[in-house]
Amino acid sequence: MKNCIFCKIIKGEIPSIKVWEDAETYAFMDINPTRPGHMLIIPKKHVDYIFETEEPLFTKLFVNAKKLSKALKSSTGALKIGLAIEGIAVRHVHLHLIPVNNVNDLDPCKSKKGNIEELKQMAEKIRKELKD
Ligand code: AMP
Ligand code: ZN
Image (cartoon, rainbow, N blue to C red; front, side):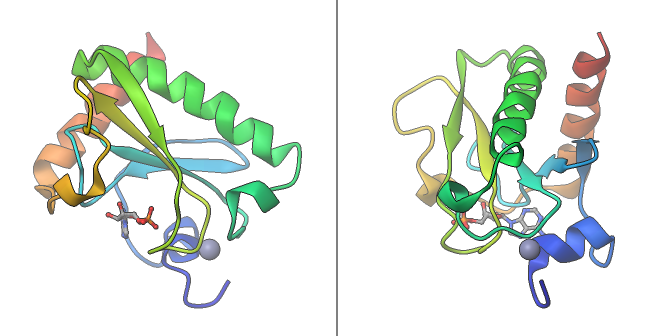
């Protein structure tokens, strides 16, 4: 989709801090994390609304989110990994995977511009956990 920032990330037209990908999905660090480790998983194909995502892609997103959540939880030591799906600012389906320890840890008002080096280090840490 023209002018979609996440389609541009998939095509490599704008940079992103990749964590993992497979043939249908792509996971990368959110540049304005709500909590350290905040990442996104998106379908490579442009879909606007999560509940209009066709099968088997819909299931694939959640299966891969589950796989990533395990690595994210062990690399951050968080109590749980929270899931948020809203897609008002960016109209390309994305699942927010956010390490949570307290109520309100998913609150998007808490998001702040991340430090690129710290985001890269976090992505590396998560990738290592995925391999183990
Ligand atoms: P929303 O559509 O409300 O779920 O918000 C879009 C999310 O995408 C926000 O958390 C942004 O920080 C994030 N975001 C926007 N552009 C980028 C980008 N280029 N790289 C990583 N994350 C992004
Ligand atoms: Zn798109």
